[in-house]
Amino acid sequence: MKELVEKLYSGQDLSDSELAELINDRDDETAELLRIRADEVRQRYYGKKVFLRGLIEVSSHCKNDCLYCGIRRSNRDADRYRLDREMILSCCENGYSLGFRTFVMQGGEDSFFTDELMCSIISEIREKYPDCAITLSLGERSRESYRLMKEAGADRYLLRHETASPELYRRLHPAEMSLDNRIRCLFDLKELGYQVGSGFMVGAPFQTTEDLVTDLRFLQKLQPQMIGIGPFVPHHSTPFAEEKGGTLELTLRLLGILRLMFPKVLLPATTALGTIHPMGREMGLKTGCNVVMPNLSPVDVRKKYDLYDNKICTGEEAAECRHCLDRRIVSAGYEVASERGDCADFTI
Ligand code: SAM
Image (cartoon, rainbow, N blue to C red; front, side, top):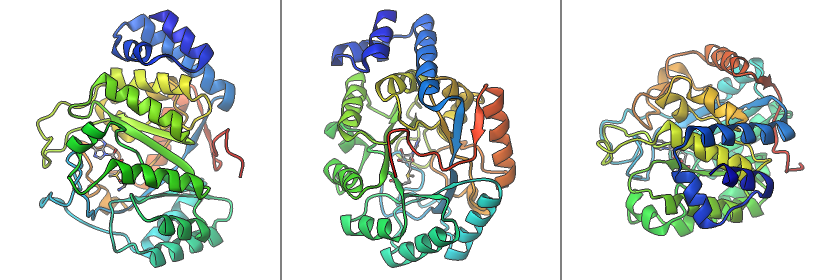
């Protein structure tokens, strides 16, 4: 199995069956070699730098009904909130003073955030913080909406494809959602000049190794600047409440594989990874990750952005969150980079 790691390391690709073999392998020595090679490749392009993204969770209202997600519209127990313009701007002000140079506005698909409102918030942030990157993660919108928000000053967009297998997509989403539309959104975003982030959950219900290989092949086609993966974590008020969550081992294995297949990509050590293991994010950083996303949302709404059970980082103020992550980055042997942190492959 170690030969497969070396082959992926030197050639950035494997056949479908080799990828499946490497994903299914559970040997500790192979996992350690994959980690070492992934770290070597991340250090070749990014040194020891870890980029920070200040995450502002703008709304827990969502018109969608994804079966895995705690803020799905059918969850009557969800405590809904949305931030107004002043609150979002005050998060940015706080974030800027804490050294963040990327703001990520993420939320459920909330029709309150019309193009007009989003564009005016984006323009104001752009004007106040010309040295910062503005990232959006607001789900599926029209090409025209993406165009207007880009014109207003947005730089990046995060939209996980969730799964590139049509059959699995249907089992994870309600009938009115479609994989074709999600893929349309991603290619529109790329064509419009956004730096794009995509990705998937590891260990989602019904997911097979073949589905994961399909995800890797889709990412090769899309060539995103960022790839966000994290374990599926069940939420008690969803149809998947009783399903098993994704494991640390498999998530780390896929992170290592992704780093070798996409040497220059931005790869976050996600909150979900930190949720399933207290050292999950540190282990992610040591396996090729080079981004973390500290929470900048006001503390009183944090618990309401309740995507999955036991989500971490819901109690601290932004400053505490930042300092906690700083300590974790340094303890893992890396350094905090207070800069926009663009992808090494993307020229702006
Ligand atoms: N509405 C936007 C969208 O669809 O991209 C952004 C918000 S959505 C809640 C952000 C991400 O949370 C999703 O892409 C999904 O992968 C992740 N997520 C949702 N439920 C999850 C769960 N139970 N476990 C792990 N990740 C989850």
